[in-house]
Length: 179
Image (cartoon, rainbow, N blue to C red; front, side, top):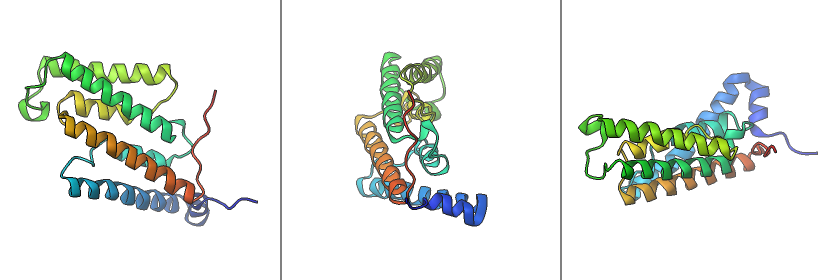
């Protein structure tokens, strides 16, 4: 007889409020850990696309897009597509789009990076929508320096491992891979 996962007990005890509290506390812990690493390293270990990733882990762990492997592959593809489009459009010396303004090259880099990320993740059947934000963060030059890209990759791995480990420890297993 297996133990009932904490998420299921929270839902049974307090309904959606219990599930919301469960997800909120775990999101706070995981993103807080990533932010702490960022504070210690003075690098961006906390960025927008991590928010929806941890929300998927803790609000909707049964969804295919919430699987840890989907998160790692999705954000990895997003990082690579963002870097590729950023460099292909010759934006290395441009101020980030939110600072220097949006121009046609940023529009092309941003739209193309999301299209490539979507195409690859759909083709390999590993959806993870937050990867669309990761690719935009990079292709729009918001975080595009090599040290920033490495810290993004590190944060993605950290958040995914923590999310998986916490879910497993609390009895919530990731969604099964469907064929």
